[in-house]
Image (cartoon, rainbow, N blue to C red; front, side, top):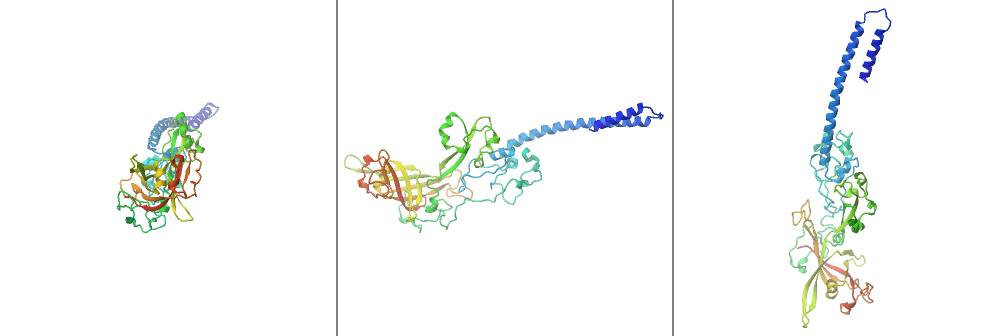
Length: 422
């Protein structure tokens, strides 16, 4: 614009000089033309310098952008980079188990969407303590004044929502028996050695009910291939449509429950959900085996199942239920009238056996003594139809069972003792 104005003025002056005039002294106008032409040359030089500087800045900006992208280490940061800001939400809020790798909290690694996650994000600490506005990604234009909290929250450190000791439902508050005198009860190979501190044992029936047969939920990006068709049932129904772009992934329901980065490689993916049991329940019984010569031998029998546990509101008793096909465990529970159950949860990340304030116990669970509830147990035939006289509510006797007719067992086990691990 300046160049155009100078050129226009010079042209006008030249025209003026060429027109009719009685004034023959043009030295002043000629000097003005010279000055304007000099100014125009300077502007041209300045323009060249600015264009070169702009080119250099554009190149530097590209390199910085590539570097910023290199700091992205989770899905939330990927989405924040394209303007989709949301925070990670643990799909298993009652535990320290998260869905994906721990967040990186060094330098610019969390600039693209600092999560509502406590590690390295203590309340009261200014965001600019660790993060600088000079390396903000492109999606943060206009937010260079350090007001990070307008989009990102910083939570106070919190522990899993588990009642404290001494309250009903606390894992360490005994209920079976309430006295916690387990020395009078035979509980297993370790005898009277227990560890029941820092949440290592779940000796409270109400709390244990929230663990037995319950599951953790997890989410992952699953490539859509013919081989993946066998696990389609585990996929969230809202996310069954294959996607190929990050922008699509950042808008999916359930997006907040994983930190795994979207591959963004042009292939088709879907957000899949799967669940695993919180812990393992091992049930131990005794098998009576006739050696064929009139002698009965007793063999230990163990099996792993995923039984559920519930309280009978009428009686106040707790029962463990499991449906299995006819096998040694089924027969032993019915004929022996009792069983031992070890329920164990294991966290491979914890380096403290009895637990630590940050990670919780490495091993946790309980040992239970249960007795067969014949009134609540039912037996089915080889076609899984109820056997008359041996259904739920019949309160049958073990010696009346014809095992050649039995195809499956729906076992009900009354909880008698809940003792610590040992």
